[in-house]
Amino acid sequence: MVFKLFGEQTNGMVAIVEHPFAVGAFVDPHVHTREDEYSIVTEGEIGFRSGDREVVLGPGGYITKPRGEAHMMWNAGQTPARMIEVISPAGLEHFFWAFRELLAGGPPDPAALGALAAEYGLEFTTPPWFSGVVARYHLSSELPE
Image (tube, rainbow, N blue to C red; front, side, top):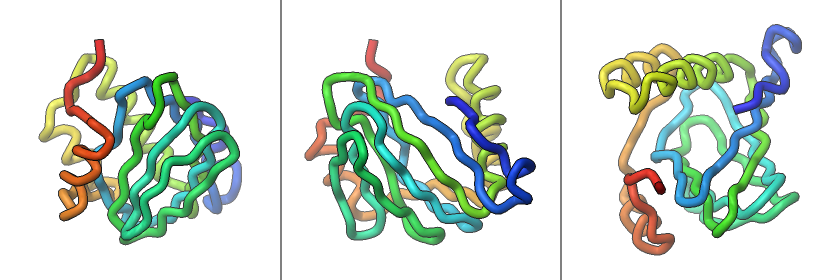
């Protein structure tokens, strides 16, 4: 992750984080309770499911992910991908910072991840559409080698 802009630089209004997506990578479905997100693909192809909307976007494509709406993202192509995440209001960038620290020691302890998520109002969920997305895009929880 590349931290482009922290909330401390914008009076808490917005934060910007760049996320890389390795081939085969995905983010589990989750809900933000405090902020809205705006994702802009800058490289590769990234799939998004947010509420009832499902789309694969290339460079320049964007999607809104409003607070309270379950969403997930995945690398939908055969090459590495990147996206810019605009977070409003700011604050969630600190979750990403702490999550990066958790990952430094290998796969994070589920209890530690759950506690960190709760601290930032982030809820992991399994919406009814999750298994369909996994099947359509051949996603796996196993990390690619």
